[in-house]
Image (cartoon, rainbow, N blue to C red; front, side):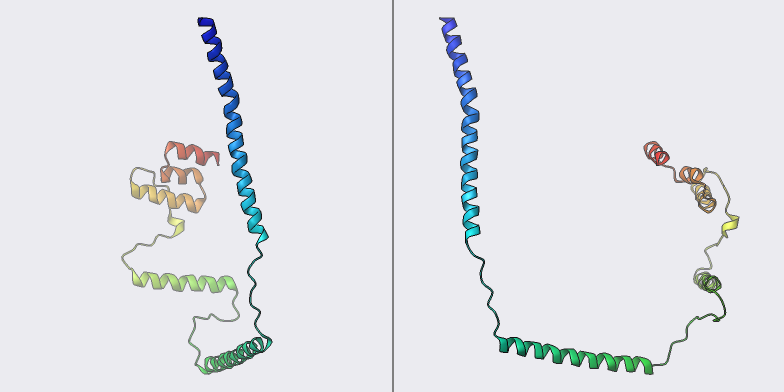
Length: 174
C-alpha cells in the first residue's frame, strides 16, 4: 500500500513537472499573439495627413520672411556703421616689432603687478625658490607639493598629497 501511494505521489509530481512548463509556455504564447495582433493593427492605421498650405499662403509667408530678412540686414549694417564710428578703447597693446613670447611676458608681468596691488598681504614666492620642506606640517607639505610640481617629481607630489593606501597603490599602478 505504501508502495502504491509512493508511485501515485511520484506520478503526480512528474505530471505537475511536465504540465507546469507547458501551461506557462501556452500563457506566454497567448500574450505574445495578442501583442502581435495589436501591433499589426497599429501598423495598418495610416498616419494622419498634414494639411498642405495653399500656394498663395505659402507665397505670402515667404514674402514676409524675405521682408524681415531685408529689415534685419539693414539693422546689421546700421550697427556696424555705429561701431565703426565709436572711438576705439585704449588697449594694452605692445610694440608691433616684438614677438608673441615677449608680448606674453609683458602681459604676465602687468597681470602680476595688478594682482600684487590688489593683495599686498599675500607673499609671492618665485618658482625657483620652491623647496622640499618635508611633510611635518600642512604648510611644509604644501611647499613640498609646489616644489614637486615645479620639478616634476611625482613621488614627492603623491607623498605631499597624502593619499590613502588603496589610492596610493592605484596611483602607482597608473
